[in-house]
Image (cartoon, rainbow, N blue to C red; front, side, top):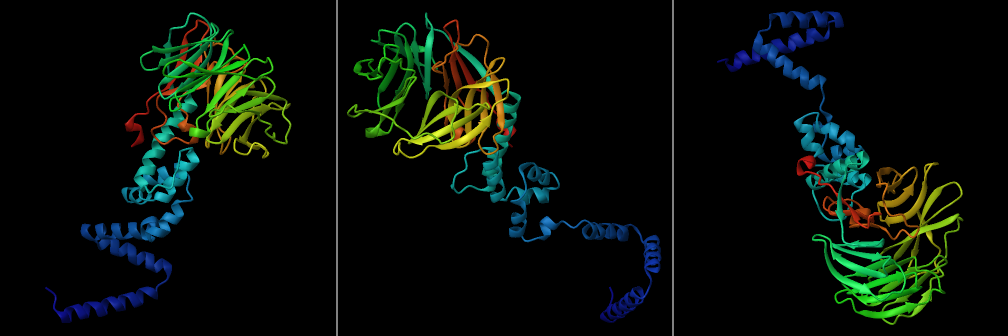
Length: 430
């Protein structure tokens, strides 16, 4: 063991060597280092290796304060964050604990992002699940098909909410089915012409139907009892009906080929909605009406084949409409109708060589998927034979709302085609 005096002697010698070393030229310094390396044994070389690794490969992400690292990471896109995770376990720990970065990429990817207090693991898991869902959508592999049989005549309209399927037929009747079992729950009989549109609300226990006999009928969902008939479309066929469930201030919306009408359910006062249209002229108003909270959305196309989604406020019908999104269609296709509209996505039915369901993201107008329909689908200018399933995902994927029914339509053999979301495995979201 070295004594204190020996340590002092060594320290003095080391200082003298260091002083002389600083006086050498660059070439002489290199020769000195080469000579020392030749004289070194394994333990010295091992020590030198680790010291050089730390000096030459500066790990700035770990050297910086954690708050500064997070400030840098929040500017990276999703793929860059994933690349950083693969650099080292230390980097992965830093990146995977940066809540603000993962929450931001979730929003940009099209997820529903709220102000709820969740950690980075929650948002990272949600992003990974969304990433696999979006990739599956881009490949067109997100759906599986199911057929439902039970009608003997043409199915003119379909409507789906939360496991219940309502249908309207050319045989002048409407029906309500349990989707999971295919069992007929109720039959609604009373129109004297083909029923073109149907809608319902479980909480209001109400079904509404619109017919070629120019009337709207209001039914009790649970008992199929006819409550009231609303004639007021000047002998025009009822192209579409919508039930806006807002408790005691609920509405019935209907559309013919001329105008949009509105009734308040409590007293059935009738008004024609003179909603102010968006200032940009469009060539054609296409089906169909979509309702979300107090907003009613509809779509139009102009002469250069651009599709516009327009929004009005039901509480302020005199306020000028605003444009939600414009989407330029491919020159060989045209828009048939608006299937759904939300905070993150719009769904438009288009027709080219074949009909397809286009899912469009608002933020960058990206066409996420174009799902082709079978050639034997039932065509309808009123769009009543097409219906989206559960719609919560239109406001952004949350890891749970991309399940169940995606789309329902009728086929020429009087069957019902149902597209269901395919499962994204839990392993894909690790």
